[in-house]
Amino acid sequence: MRTIASDLRGSRELAWRLIVRDIQTRYRQSALGLVWTLVPPIVTAIIFIFLNRQKILNVSSGEIPYPVFALVGAITWQVFVESTTTPLRVVRQNLAIVSKVAVPIEAFVMASMGQVAFTTLIQYSVVLVILAVAGIPFSLGFVAALGTLALLLVLGTTLGLLLVPLGALYTDIERGMETALRFWFFVTPVVYPTPQSGVLSWIFAINPVSPFITVTRGLLTGSAVEGVGSLALVSGLALVGLGFATILYRLSVPVFLERSTA
Image (cartoon, rainbow, N blue to C red):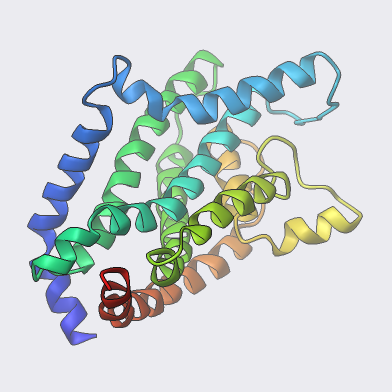
């Protein structure tokens, strides 16, 4: 832990350079540039808004206008998806560097979190504009929502980091993660409220992402905030888990480097 803490302090400059490099590479040859960070959640929200208005889906969002309900949920979910998938992507992209140059490997964890934080701020800014258009006044809940998104980033990074040791060796992990996230979307209150009864209500209750969606939505829209206790519990476990995942990641790097270059 002392070595990890020391390397974290010494890897800030490298992490910053990796963040800048990866963001520039990602959007350098794109005409729309940063707009692409908004496309996945907005398209998802538009699809479900259309289905709801056409009565194909009958979703009641209570006192929150359904377009706002769906958009806030989709963008919050996107933060989780990106924070879960980015650690493995960053490590895989930099395996050649790590195998040839002695660098603080914690820099890649910091770089993945920095990239997700960057896209989250862009998406959050758009949410604020949409809330203003919808007539929802600014409140301290907007600031608190940034805190819940930061904790969600920690949860996603923890899960993603736990998958890095195997994911760096087998592409099946990355593909399986994509499939699992598609299924996970439908058992999370992203575009519809938490069921009050039945099997789905139980699944939603044990889903660690559910309180982040409901609390963030409540804070941003000024509606009732539910699930604060669950969010605090999951956040505490995520912070502890991040420390464990970082140790596992550090111990496994020499192993998967040796096997991947063999």
